[in-house]
Length: 275
Image (cartoon, rainbow, N blue to C red; front, side, top):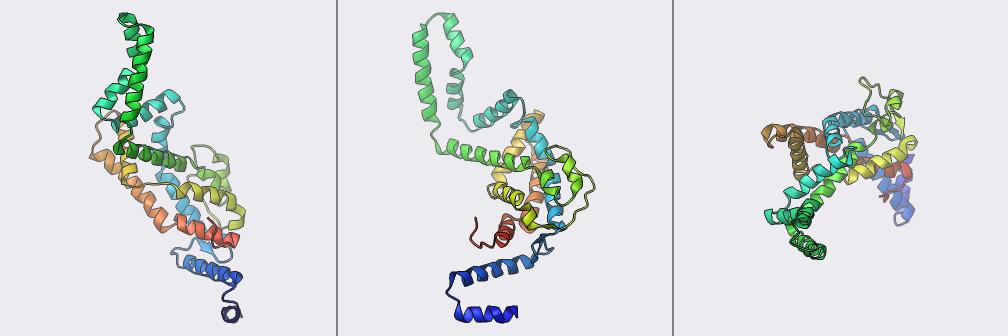
């Protein structure tokens, strides 16, 4: 009956917006059916395999969360700023670093103590140095570094996502861990109706859709790790960090990609053009 209805619609209503919408939704549903293992059913259910992949991603990211917590996302803002400034300085030339150093409070204090310049002269010189410093930063290399640091911030947001809250829909044992660093060690997931989790699924999609775990971003994570351990950046750290993100990347491409999540949201909202 459904096939006959579709055939008749294709004959008499193929140009109508409603028919085009239904056709697009059917195409999306067919593409989701091809996933192996399946993560979604045509009845609108997210399967345990979806939660299992989500849980694996959460586990793989644990050392990265710990690293960020100790460094760029440290609750002590002075420590966090120290690491962020370190990353910025790596992108500067030697000349840029010298100009930046000349703007520090300690240099101004030395000039005042020396007594060779009036306060007005010191302020005027600082203004000149600051203008020179800002102008020196307007280079392709430093602008590229700024973009890379923005991507690091988005990765931080992804790592900070409350996976426990999302997983609690599939296993109530996660409820007590919501918002905490701890988690369930032996989960038991069950299927969940998508309509029940649309808000948190949307949150996850929006965070995931802007997350970049390409090689340059992974390199920055390795640099932060080496800085925390106060050792030169070597193959061991690079290899360890790369393995983590290779595992996460595989799960995001083969199990719960942003494209698959968006497809599920579109089916649930019955809107094939939802973004």
